Length: 196
Figure 1 (tube, rainbow, N blue to C red):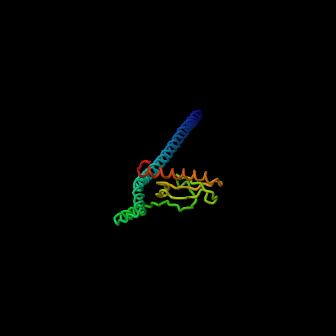
Figure 2: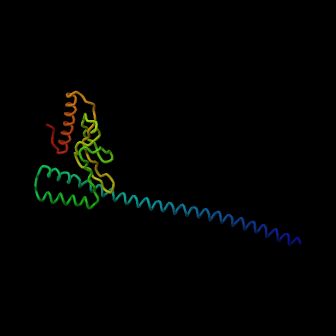
Figure 3: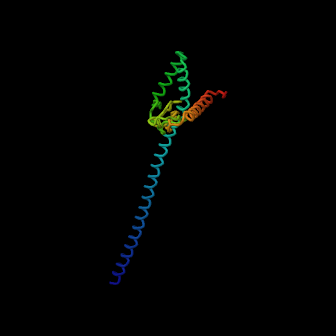
């Protein structure tokens, strides 16, 4: 009987030991499973991040290339405005415009009187006005802006009306002369001319 009790005790201690080992193995298995799932999630996040960075890098590269083309478009438009009627100039201009259109490049060219939008426009000249309805409206477009796939490549440079209560004529003339002087300085700088 004593042998049976000892066998039972040995079996129970063996069972407890096996259960303990099994519990430890289950705990280790859960730890490894958790580590595996975390590593898998980290890998997937890294893959997504690198894909996004690659895509954004490609888009930024396209935006930089587009940004380099824009001054040519501006120059062609100026030549057209000065009525230099060369068929070759028009052909090149049309070709460049087609390239822009083909590559989903949208021109930002607000009309006079459109509401100024800071997410699309850059106000480089403020023109005082006594007409309240013109407050914060575009007066003129100095240079067009461009968007590529929803990203601003260049903001449209505009002059903007700013409402000021009616002043005496002399004060308004001075403000107007300042605005004209600022605009003239920008033009001289743009065309590389020296102020007279």
